[in-house]
Length: 94
Image (tube, rainbow, N blue to C red; front, side, top):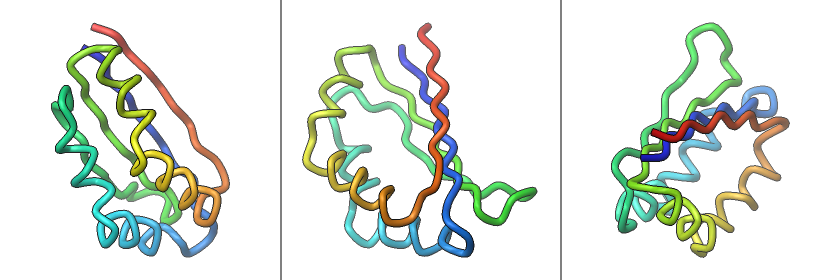
């Protein structure tokens, strides 16, 4: 099992717009629908109004590799360039 904790440090005031765009384009739903996805959920940080947290759980490393080749993953990267200043990734294998 692969667990990814992703923290997005969004540009000032852009956190809600970033998440709204992800949802309106169905990028989160597309990721959840992938073979090997167990969990894919976003959370707002209370302490930082510009921080967005993504918790991902995947069946195995192959599922993560496959996810990283999907068109919606590439689109997500384009949105990050628009809305995010910094991305912090923590990865755990179980």
